[in-house]
Length: 194
Image 1 (tube, helix red, strand yellow):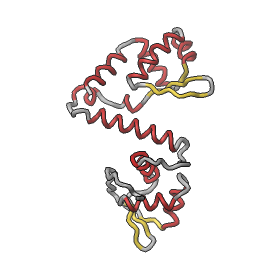
Image 2: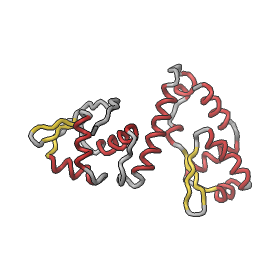
Image 3: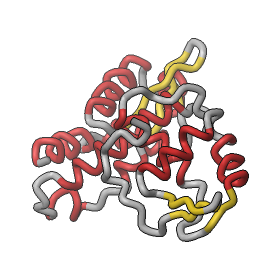
Image 4: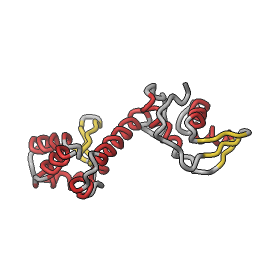
């Protein structure tokens, strides 16, 4: 955590990088547009962008012929207390890594909010299941057809997903009625459909 914090602070301790971050805070952009907006060369933007990506402050994605850059806004929500004063043995950094991993999995398997293919790896599958499960209200009861309809908006195999929810204890089934657990245990890592 200390090394990551030091690297992050060193990276932002540069006037040009701060200007780039501010520009990306306004809107996602690509190298040539940033160079024009900031009055610097494209090579300078590319140099600094590499440092910002390595520090975990910026994401890059391909769009046609361009690499478009955007802020990793979750990093910017960290407070100085979390970065410097909090001696939590890396819990904040771990939480940040988990969130970044979750977003990466969802981007890969649910790029448009719909999961075409369920991941084979359990950890990734649970991330997708949790995203689908977030559509249900805690403590509420649903008829089976309603559960199926909600799941099918995000994945075709609603039967497997529904069984997974019950197997994980996130939902309880009785006489065709499903009750959403108000406090599901998301830390359970066992094969939910095995």
